[in-house]
Structure formats: structure tokens, C-alpha cells
Length: 156
Ligand code: HEC
Image (tube, rainbow, N blue to C red; front, side, top):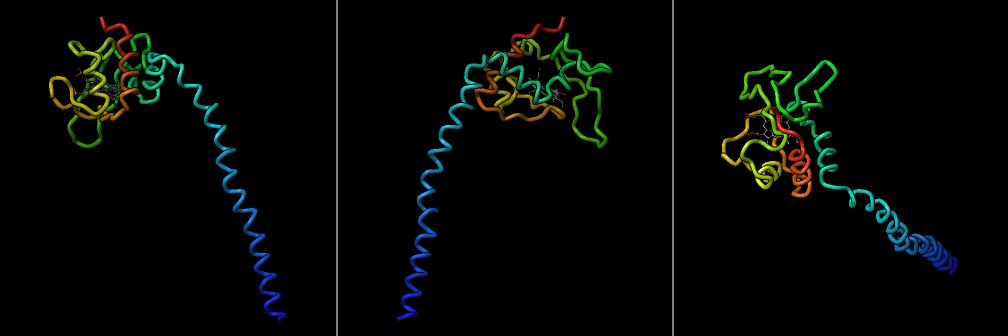
């Protein structure tokens, strides 16, 4: 009798110990649901050229496609190409010059440039050599980078 009384007391304790946890669980997502709504408002209104400029700044295109000076890439001639300021330590396929892409490469359409950054080939089909990275951007990111690059003055 004592034993079963203890057992049901323990069962009750167990039950009451579980109850707050179980009832708290459904409440948590409701509290979290308010936060992402506020965060999502920031990038939506951004225009593609500004977004593309930001993406270019974080993906490092200027480190290769803009002539290097002692204080960094010469941004007055952004993405107008130049010899790379570095070379590989091992023998490997290598393109020592990054071509101008400002205003888009000669003969490329915006759609071709976007497709290339989304993981596609050059319009000519000729594969690009290292150290040009292989990018697999989302269509939206590739289109934004294309809009920014197309807005830049071509090399003279
Ligand atoms: C680490 C250096 C490096 C970085 C970073 C880099 N590139 Fe390149 N890129 C090159 C080199 C070198 C070539 C030339 C490859 C060749 O001749 O085969 C090239 C070629 C290209 C081409 C082909 C141009 C043509 O006329 O055929 C495009 C387009 C291009 N890059 C766009 C970009 C963009 C956009 C970014 C940034 C999102 C970028 N690259 C980042 C080095 C780089």
C-alpha cells in the first residue's frame, strides 16, 4: 500500500514535471515567429546594382580584375582588368591576366554573363583557367552582379 502510494506519488511528480515542458514547447515557435519578419524587410527594397556592388566587394572580383596599387585595387578603373599581382607556387594551368569585365566583356549579353556566374560556361564555350574561381551563384545574385558590372565604364 505504501509502495503503491509512493509509486503514484512519483508518477504524479513525473507527470507534473513533464507538463510544463510539454505545454511550453508549442509556445516557443509562436514567440520566434515574430523575429524573422522584421529582419526580412532590410534586403528586399535594395536595388540590383547596389546589391551587385556589395556581392562583388565580398567575392573579391576586384582583387584580380582591377589593377593593383600599393594601397589596393585602383577603383577609379574598377574591373577594367590587368595582370595578376600574384603567381602560383606550383606548376598548374594559369591565366596571368584578368581581362576587363567592366561594362561586360566584349560581345557578351547580360543573360550570358548571368549564366556564366550561375555556373555556366563562357559564351564561346572555352573554359576559363585558374585562378578564375568557379561561381555557382543563385540567379538573383548573378543578375545583381551582372547589373552592377554592366553599369561600370569600359576600359579605354
Ligand atoms: C583570383 C582571381 C580572380 C577572381 C577573384 C575573379 N576572377 Fe574572373 N577571371 C580571372 C582570370 C585570371 C580570368 C581569365 C581566365 C582565362 O583567361 O581563362 C578571369 C575571367 C573572367 C571572365 C571571363 C571574361 C572573358 O572575357 O572571357 C569573367 C566574366 C569573370 N572572370 C568574371 C569575374 C567576376 C564577376 C568575379 C567576381 C564575382 C571574378 N571574375 C573573380 C581571375 C579572377
